[in-house]
Length: 311
Length: 304
Image 1 (cartoon, each protein chain N blue to C red):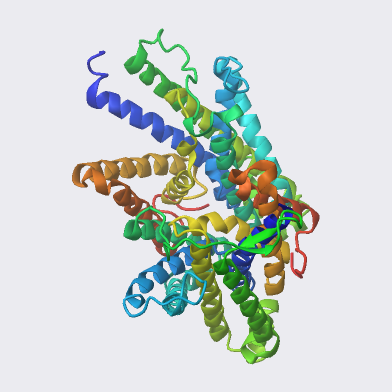
Image 2 (image 1 turned 90 degrees about the vertical axis):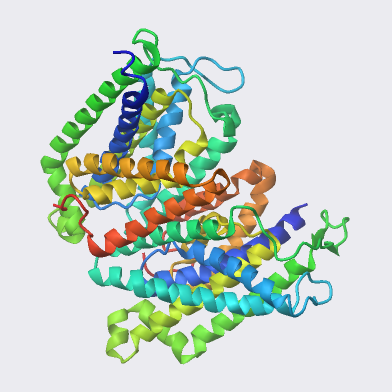
């Protein structure tokens, strides 16, 4: 058993945990964009807040910075959702009353600002060196590296199923119908007496909380976080996942996340194999440029997504 | 000290202002927030660098105390033309098609994708190392002696940037107020249906909006390269201040964008001793949230 968990199988487990972490974020974005039509360009910022909040709450006391409160991991995860939700309120309240593009601009702004804070507010975040010793619960009890990773995969899979089930119930409820009504025709929804701003804000905050939870999931899996884990490229990958999977479809969001992450890591490995070390940074830039072009091409030719349909 | 910060803020602000004019025009006339506008600045800056290498083979003379001469001005012209061409190409390939589909936000997403692709292609082509138009070190001239509130020192290049910006803003204002095309642009921004009915060639207005907006962005990019440095992320770093300036000034108001740009530039510069240089971009964000809460139409805006 343990031998099997080394080598390719261990890599598969690692790959799947990260893919499901992306799936969680994509589910959050799907609620915002797929169901409510809210264009969030600051996905990475909300994931960052969740990761850091949980890390600050759960790491052991560190004399070099504020906290390390040593609280249990579930408290950290709850804190992650709460703080991501709070930042969503901060952005949503001024921006959601206005036209769509304002939300795009303000979410872009908050992601830039949070990245700056993570990088520079060393007394809280550890600055560019990041935060180490984020607890991995039951690490030794579950057999360290291999066994624990597998257990964590099961945990994250259960979490994804739970969030999927919860979001599916919500979006099938009358509340979800109002969201779709707002997405399709805001004026009509307002005319039948729906408080458009409130529904939008609720969907936006809830989606951000799922993203925050995903951040915590990442932090407790790797055990170490740094600002460069949450660069704008993360926002892009998640958008690509949602668009490939088909916005407005929970299953598609999950499938899109796994598929795009597979393509991403696969092309990364190919680059590693064929590109000499000195050209790596530039090859990686070409990989990212490719995602940008692909996004535009999908928008132009398959605006409803590659796998699913919007509905 | 305070005067020096104001002067630094004014120079940064004039670069933001030039970029913001183009952004506010495209926002008002084409009706979407163009996230690729920052990359227009970067593209212009690199194109000028590329052209400069060619022109400097012909002449390396500089104007008096300035670090540059005719070669950079010629490169600036090349950069303006190339960036305008790039904007027209993007419009043709992407924005116009997405706009026709009728989903407003699809165009914004497209611009986001185009920005990512452009930025990384520039990184691929030029590498991530900062580059400069001139390696010469300029001596800052004392404009005011140290005894007056700490004094003001500026480099000749910074003065030139300020001067050219003032000229461009005046020219832009006269063009929009007096020229037929400028008035047509304002009409389309105000009410596209009515503009079409009155016989305005909307397609031509759209074309010229891209040319002017991208051209000014190229100038802003070259100025940012001249006073700071040229990097693949320079436009991305300026995008938040640009949007803050546009919204502060009111979408569709070029003079508002100029004023907004100066306010953002000065606010960032004044905030540096308070919160440190690393939080500059956060200042633009706070200004943005504040203006959205207090007066979302901006200082001179008409539409919400």
